[in-house]
Length: 175
Image (cartoon, rainbow, N blue to C red; front, side, top):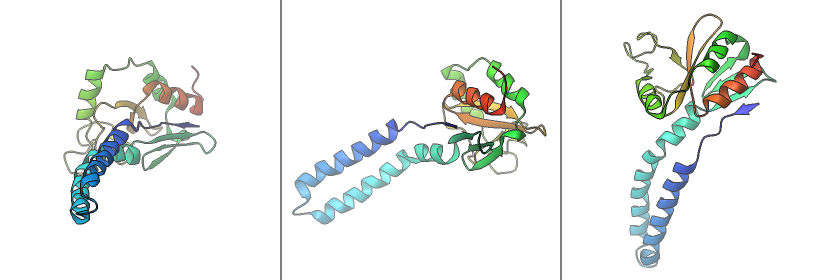
């Protein structure tokens, strides 16, 4: 089984700064102005929530889990049977040269699959983004695989090499 872990550093920093800020405000205001402190805590929460939007989105739409026992690949909200993936596309993806950081950012910003006519991936001749998201988070690497019926699939991953190695082992593609 392979589970791609998402980093929690950004979330920990944002939540830590929020707690430190409201704690600092609470030291001076809590006995006398508890209501003011609660209102300011709620206002600062409105700043915290957008900062946590991308990590939550990555968790919901780009979480990867390979389960060879059940024969499934789960990416975000989608469940793909491993038998539906073309082993040749996995072999080809493993042979590709990884992109540099700048190339990854450029590729992730252009990988859009919004459910609007003209902005869908298939309307633009691009692979369908797997997982349910409308785009790839900036800087994440992508892997293009093919289904057995020829449908190209785009999967966003944080660790391309580990993902493709685990997927090849689960499908039975020789190293």
